[in-house]
Length: 486
Image (cartoon, rainbow, N blue to C red; front, side, top):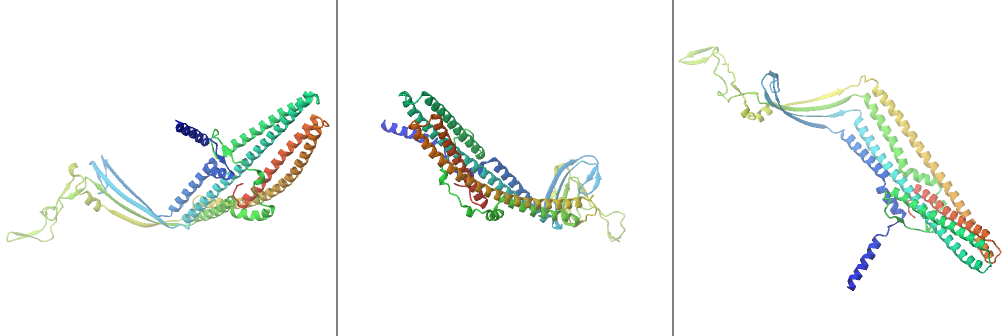
């Protein structure tokens, strides 16, 4: 019985452990989001479709070969497919065919079209990676927001503890008549305000977690908790390693958004060649194989003399010793028989073989006038190339502007961090000095609470400045090609 109870408690303990929410770090969140985020999945589908288009364009360069067959019953007046003659007899027919062709010369249209499709697929792959990067940055933003909200809630919790201690000490003094009851009421009011601040901070934590779940494509009811890490322990590169010119050089060579813009310029260039090919003739080689069968086809009833009639009576001959000698070659006519339904398939193979036909040939198509379609298509390709080039230029300009803006924001965030650090240290000294004066009865409750609130606000501003600085530096590191991790 003792062992059964022991196993029971172990099972309960393991069950409780299994239900504990998983601790997510930033790297895990980013990897999970890339695999499960809906926007990333849609980008992946677009990339796969582009790959299929590339394979289709490449396959268009290959020769074609198609087979066909048909079988049916014809009634009334129709053409016998084996004799090409009209007949009023119902008959069963069967035909076969195989045809195909290949373009020998098309001014490189098919090849350039295949190259353009392949480049478009590569651009779609870059778009997918760019979407993943955007999601990763969003995950990092919300992750830091969750950490910041958790620290804000901890600060508010500490504030409640401090106010509670002051309330207890003041209550004792009020009871012995050292302080008026008004001081006690003011502290109770402050405690209520601190509790409200703490509740709001916890609500911000949960809201930030909900935003994270949406990015990760997690169910809203699923338990979720992140790995709490002190902001002071997050490793950051120095400004010397994140100079904007250097970061831009690295980013321009590696970021998928730049790659996609460059590839689309190449796509537009290939499409120009495709459109230009419409002005040139095309030369194709074609081939066709065919045969047919009909059950009403007349056939010779036998071979040698069995399958032919006796000589025509009008053929000239002479008689010598009761033997006929023809002056000219005798005229024979085949003795034919029409197949009936009972032996439709007799000689099917022979008839298909006898009706087997082949054809091979070259065909040239020369563009003369097609309503200016080729000319307009070529002009459109020139404009598309120009537009793609402008997009490429704008992408590079925007990237450089974003990097310099990110660097300036990082410098501003650092200056704010230093200023808030000084303000927090000053507010802490003021609060400690005010506490001592309050304990000596030299300072009123309102003044004490004002200093306490100023200290609380300074600590929260300092934490917010710390996380803002971390995000700004991490953004520059991301542009530089570093992975998102804390």
